[in-house]
Amino acid sequence: MKLEWTILVIVWMLTFSLFFFIPHRKFRLAQAAILFKQMITWIIGQVVVELGLLEYPVRCFASVHRSSFTFEFLSYPVICGLFNARYPAERSLWFKLFYFCSYCTAITVIEVLIEKYTELITYIHWSWYWTWITLLITFGMSRIFCKWFFSLK
Image (cartoon, rainbow, N blue to C red; front, side, top):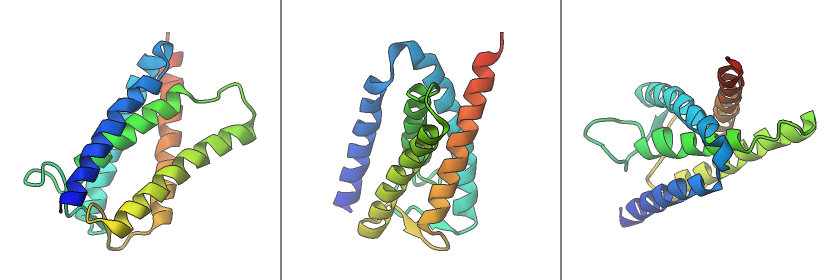
């Protein structure tokens, strides 16, 4: 159990350190992406847990919420904020696709390792490809939302 809480503390520290990699001029964009992603992942995370597809045996606020506050409300949204702030809008379509896939793949690999070696996440009726697909969809939705939101005058 001590390993899991150590990992959670490290995840919190790494998540907050990601703010230093967000360019100052794109901080508002990152904030909008973070808030949008929090809304999406909070709902999806709750649905997935309530349907019994995933379980978070060790989590913050265990008496209040069955989903993982750390991953669903903190880490994934902040990574999404960094993703949108550093999005290569001027690059080719292939590079943009690579950018999307690299973020989703990196997060999925980390989640699979956490699921395999700790008690932070337990896949019940879930698999790594569902994580990858939902990340791809939600990152895409956040990108569309940010483009729309910042195009309003």
